[in-house]
Length: 47
Image: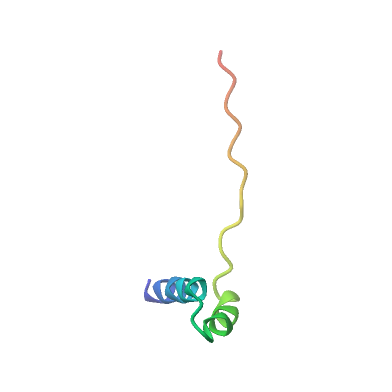
């Protein structure tokens, strides 16, 4: 969990414009691919 917290802190640093944070984020991005954007399941038709 600590590694994900660090990654999120680096993302926040990039948003704040901290110099060099974008380089660190680019390096870490390969280790944190994120979740795929799955489509929500279709609602079942009422019977």
